[in-house]
Length: 195
Image (cartoon, rainbow, N blue to C red):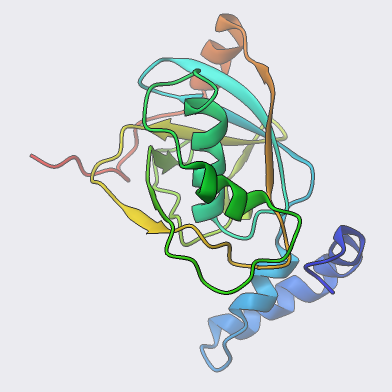
């Protein structure tokens, strides 16, 4: 039910998610699927800054089960849309992330990461985590994209087979807006560059 209804997620997440996370912290129950389902963001604005090009974007996301799926869709929107350089994810990987029809079994489709996902303070946002892990600044979730520190790839299947993700470019930020958002970021200690 949580995968099929944003209304059910909204109605119950605030009551159940904190208890679910408290139980998970005790390491006695594996509630990852429940916690991830309750933390799914629906129609959420996300400010995305691409550090190598110094550009900024507002992207609306929803129904994304983990940051692997988010990473794939951001690369589709930004690289595939010609806004930033990189390798566009395959059409098959994007279909697996967004298809309204439930996924049928496991695929062999692989996605190669286009970015390093970073919090505004420079800490890494792991692909294994959730869009809900992205911190808010001035009332908006703020994600910084940087050059990947190493090449990573993953299976393109989505975490929740019945929950299609969406990521749509709402607008390209002006140079002034981008500078203002970048003022809230730092490279931080979270990234260790290979020598």
